[in-house]
Image (cartoon, rainbow, N blue to C red; front, top):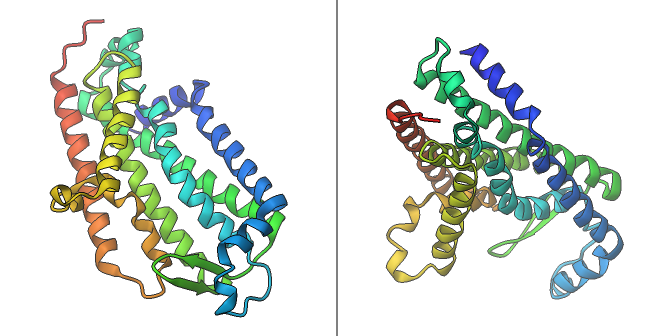
Length: 278
């Protein structure tokens, strides 16, 4: 199994598209933080001008904590697309190129091969989220320094710099769990098709459609929203409530773990019975 994972990791990091995700995140983080460095004061002043009549604000409001929070809101939307570029190509890309037949001739069961590809996709997702977290922290620290975090979410919450580290660790961990759901969905779709474009477009389309349903929040959909996995992609924000609500967080974790299991079980079953003709 370890050998299979090493082989899959080698194949992933040999492809140029693997590094598109890291490059895209680097550009987005640098662009947003650069813009905030030069224009952030005026933007933040406009956003909190009503608060200045109520609170006495001292020190630098724009700091590494605020920038990490802003970037986490932005990147959690884009990272699923970047993950699909790699995981969607895992099985379908090899099927279209014909290399999957060579792999199946090795003395490994299809279940082990699928598991190796899934674990590799999880490792890539972890590295992408870790790169995002480290880059946000390092660049934010260099450009803005430390400070307290002000969050405008269901009211105003102010967290001291000593109280934000564990919140960001939990938030990025929750974000990683969501990305593992995306990786599992993309890999599952990849097992059904022989074209690498299909899983990428299909996964992104599913996420967009479900996000639209979640955003609309119509009465008709209220009963099913808790069971839609995209509903829980933003649950990391609960870690930035002054009074931490544990029930929605636990529910989000359970629902997403269930989806990860379901997607991988479906993918394994289909991959085991799939006719590889090319």
